[in-house]
Image 1 (tube, rainbow, N blue to C red):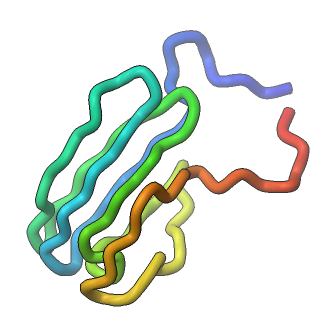
Image 2: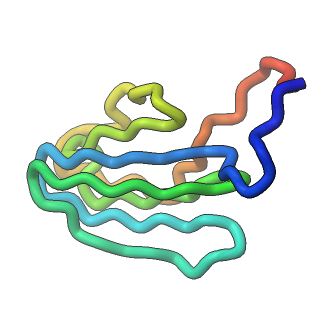
Length: 94
């Protein structure tokens, strides 16, 4: 069973903005973080469990979780609330 080394977060979330996008990230055990990403800007967060994301412009940002780019979560201008990442898979982990 491959486990991350002690002190290494389990998950990395990266957001790359194509359009101006308001984003709110909630990581378990941390205060929520909100920001507006402008086109070309990116930001990254780490978590030992999951991320809870609210997007003000679902089509305006590309999300990458643990190095895997996700397909667009919605259309340009669409608001999406409380998206939990990484997606829970039916695969058994570890």
